[in-house]
Length: 135
Image 1 (cartoon, helix red, strand yellow):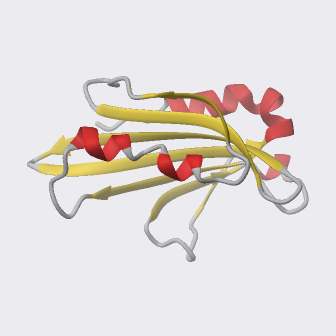
Image 2: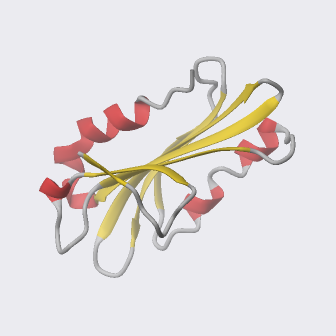
């Protein structure tokens, strides 16, 4: 995996790509977004909305979702597949809402691979997505 800075998405914290598994110019990737919320929000209400983006993807087929607490933080995760033209993609997204010094922070990690690569890359996807921690 290689880390890439993306000038088209300046609020993105980190983008990881796997160029060794590129197909037709597209690479499996992980995108990490992290930021402080401008105003306090109800964490349960915010995370109730967490799945909406994934569920609006074209041809979305949900494999699982969860709102279980994670390491004492408010947490949501969703996994499924979707289509963009011909290729089918598999995406795993995790949201973590944390609090520090009276501020709330939202962290989102999305790992996307081509669906036909998922069997080969499943361990990589799980290691990256389950490694989301805030300390």
